[in-house]
Length: 170
Image 1 (cartoon, rainbow, N blue to C red):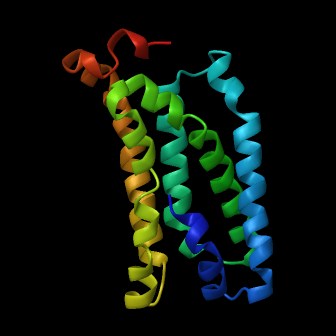
Image 2: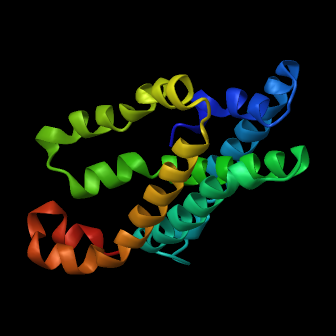
């Protein structure tokens, strides 16, 4: 999710002053820190396995992202960014685990590198369309779809056991 690279411009488009950009980044960063530090226990203690956590987290994060352009006030933008940050942080720390679990060892470094490729393509949206709203709609929708795809994980592992097979069940 390319929120970090677009959020200050998005906030300015929503009526924030440029000097408030640091507060916008702080709200996102505080949520990210809390997500990274405070949600590991959900999967570590077995309350939810990683695929279900990703399903729930991605769907909520996707809905949150897709609705950001509709936030009616600065306060709701801050809360939405904090929630996004919490979910992003809690999901982000699981990326290496997922790559290790589902990817062959000879492509793991490539997989990690590809995770940050798409945020660099964002300039098009604001430069051409004048807004980041569409990228938020697209990213939110993609996040929801990816989250829902985790429902298929057990089915896919039966047909592609080399992708993780027995390692994937907590």
